[in-house]
Length: 203
Image (tube, rainbow, N blue to C red; front, top):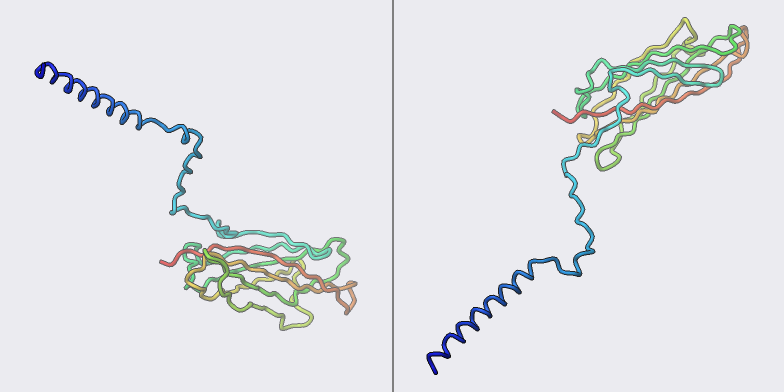
């Protein structure tokens, strides 16, 4: 009788192992409360490159501005390649401008003043900006800019904060228009342009 009893314990042990295996395998399935879980978002790369607007990306840009019935045709360019517009460099900005007049009766157009106001940005926001650049006419009432005459100038932007990634330039043109072809009285007109230029990483 004792010998016959041994196989029962062995059989029970095997059944117990089989039951345990079933429970363990059952634990590998998806639990019911996880079936509606929110999918894990795809991680974004920390090395993404953010492009910076650059109006001089092709080396030059042309603009047309209106100031009352005066139209200004302006060309901007730089003699310094864009990949050398680093924070530490002196960055020359050249411009040439010519004016035309709608309803022209022979009045002259004069440029009395050009002002360049800079704003500098970095990856974390605004940075210190250089002082404004000004070209004020040293002749009265100003430089004659009506076609066929024109105005040309070069402004040099000084070194910037090493963290700079772009510079925005608000360029204001102050003009004087003769009220009549023989008059010594003038009407003041103003036009403002905005250029954004990328700053290359330091080398």
